Image 1 (cartoon, rainbow, N blue to C red):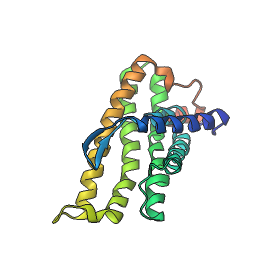
Image 2 (cartoon, helix red, strand yellow):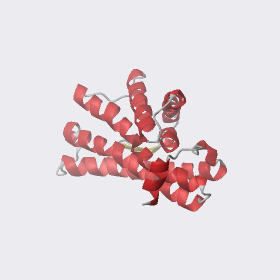
Image 3 (cartoon, rainbow, N blue to C red):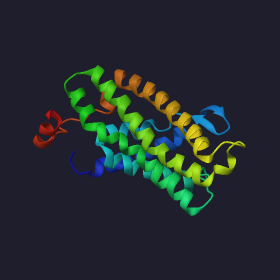
Image 4 (cartoon, rainbow, N blue to C red):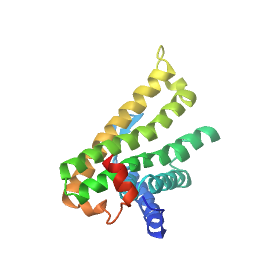
Length: 200
């Protein structure tokens, strides 16, 4: 996709702030350590509109806002860096599939577009929670029940959270795309080289 312009950067900031607002809403709490929410939806929308660069920037800003607002769970500087700068930025991995989604929307293939949306959300969720898993294993292993390894504990906690949030965000985005595909659709997003790349 083309280089990010001012509009994309403004939207990245706006959607990061919107994610903060959604994060303030009540989430689905399965356990005290496992909560599922739709807060990543704005970052996914942005990533699918503008691609991974905008998604990384917006997720990164969201992580900073979490810290500024006092919503971050800070243990050490390294843990904070991993969980709020790196992990949140990696939600933007969803943008790696933006071009395929845009092409499907442009061709009117709604079913295929929904499939790409689900795949993108899973990719972005996995990108984020991989880092939470690492941080959980390294910094929060002491919370594991007796007899359970920190690896299994972190994998279970973050895996359930990732899958639950991915499913919930997918459902929300499917509803939004079905009603208003323009939320993510852009015009003239392909160069000739990109068209060739998609075709092969």
